[in-house]
Structure formats: structure tokens, C-alpha cells
Amino acid sequence: VVIQQIALDNTDELERMSRFCIDAFYGDGDEDRKDDSLLSRKWKEIRLGAMQKAQLLDISLSTVDNRCIFVAKDVTTADNSHEIIGCCEVIEEKLDILMAARTQPMSSSTTARSSSERERRKTARPRPIIENLCVKGEYRRSGVGMALLHACEEAVHQLWVGQDQIFAQVLEDNHRAYGLFVDRCGYQFLFEDPTCTEVVLDDTLFAKEVVVTKRMLRKFL
Image 1: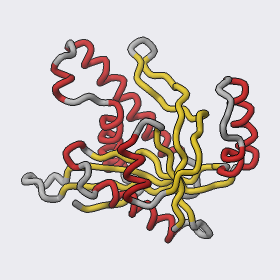
Image 2: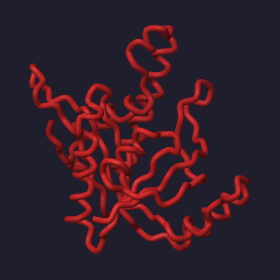
Image 3: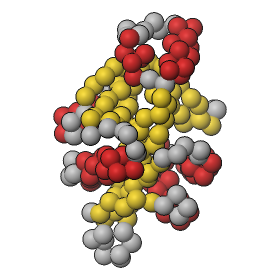
Image 4: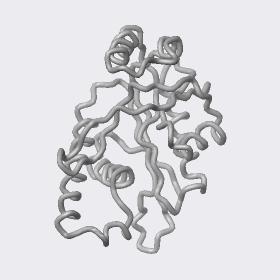
């Protein structure tokens, strides 16, 4: 297994990465697909294709100063295809970890969440955060995820001038990811953020954005 950084102008590799990433987060296993009707499978393929295009558009139109995308590849395949088996990226986003920590616990009301989020955005500053970490099922717990995280950390250490910390967010019920970051890679829990959002597939609305709680994590480099 090798870890490679994808150039942001390498269209072919970005498309391969995006296909893998979207399928990892939103696709089903082969056994589940067998139980779906042909129409249902086709409809899902259309939605996944649209989400892939949206991700590629986001990358191409990104205005952030720093963004690094990494993929893990299996170079031992017989057909020499160098299959992508994992990916992640580290990107510069505005985060305010102090305001968020001070406001815990937060009210569950929509008004309170919106107000808190506005206040945090006022004092947020650019920080490197890891996103879209995913590893193909049969390669999990083999060190691929740790290698991808290490690549992100090295990128921040070498390229982000003045940054000595890196951050990540994981869903509150994603215990596997939390264990990887905290137990195996030395990240520290900071707080839970109930104002986060994520996109989920929806049978009637194509896809929709829902409010979720994520755990904010930090590591000093």
C-alpha cells in the first residue's frame, strides 16, 4: 500500500478519488444491491453520480489557500491497476474552538444553535481540519487509515506556516473513527458540536442536509 497526494489539477485522479469517496460514504454493499429493484439501483446511481460531480465542482472552485488530498493505493493487484483503497483530505477552514468550548452544553433549540453558530463564525480563524477519511472495508484495521492521517499531519507540518495543530470532526456515534483518532493516533477530544450538518440520500428529495452532532478533536504537531 502506498499513499499518494493528488494534484488539484489532475482531473483523472480526482475523478477516481471522488468515485471511491462517494461510494464509500453513500453506496451499499454488493449483497444489499442484489435486493434492490433495477429502477431503485438506477435511481441511486444517478444520485451518487450527481454527488460526485458536486464534490469535484467544490474542489475546482475552492478558494481556500491550503488543501491537500491523499489516496491510499494497493500496488499489489495482479492487473497493476493500483486500486484506490482509501482517501482523505486536509483543508483550511475557519474554526473557533474557544467559543464552542465555552458554550457547552448548548441548547437544543434551533434559535439557540443558529445564534451560537453566528457568534462562533465572528471569531473563527483558519485552521487545518481533516475531512472525508474513508478506507475500503477489507483494508480497515490494517494501518491504512493511520497512514492517511499521518500524510495529512505531515502536509500541515511542512506547508501550513505557523500551524502547530490539526483538527478533525467525527459523528458522535462513529466509534470506529473516534477510536482511530483518539486511541491510536493521539488526538484529544475538545467538545461536541450539535450545529454540524451532513448530506444524506433521500428517496423523495434526491439528497438533503440534516443537522448532526459531531465531536471536535485536536492534535498538537
